[in-house]
Amino acid sequence: MASPEFEAFMKQMDDLSNQIKEQRARFEKEKAKVDATIAEKSKDIEEKRRKGEYGRAWQVLQQRIDMGKTCEDDVYAGIDKSPEAREVRGYLEASMVYVRDYVTDTDDEDNEAAKGRSELDAGMRKLHAFEAQAGRN
Image (spheres, rainbow, N blue to C red):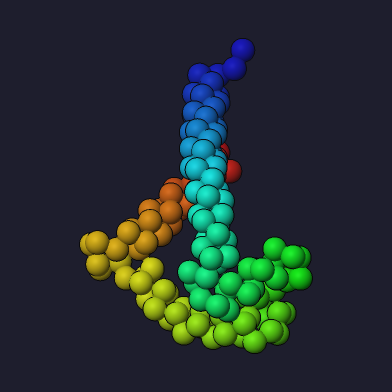
C-alpha cells in the first residue's frame, strides 16, 4: 500500500496533468476558430484582389496565383520578380513599420491588436508554467 504522501503527490500530478490537458484543449479550440476566420478572410481578400479593389498590381498577381504561375508566399519572399510583385513588396515594406508599432502599442486602451497579442503572450506563459511545473513534479 502506498504512503499517504505518495498518494497526495500522485493526486497533485494528476490534477496538474488534467489542467494542462484542459488548457491545451481550450487553446486548440481557439486555434480552430482563428484558422476558420483566417480561411474566410483569405477567400474574401482573394475575391477583392480579383475585382481590383487592392489595386492593379494585386489584381494581376491574383490572376497569376489562380493560374498557378506564382503564389502569395513567392510574392512576399521576393521569389516572384515581376513588376507587380515588386510594387506589392515595396508597399508592404513601407507599411510594416506602422504595423509593428501598432501591435506593440500596449499603452493605447483601444488597440485591439496589442490587447490580443498581450493576451496570447499571457496564455502561452501560463501554459509553459503548467508544463514546467508538471515536469518538476
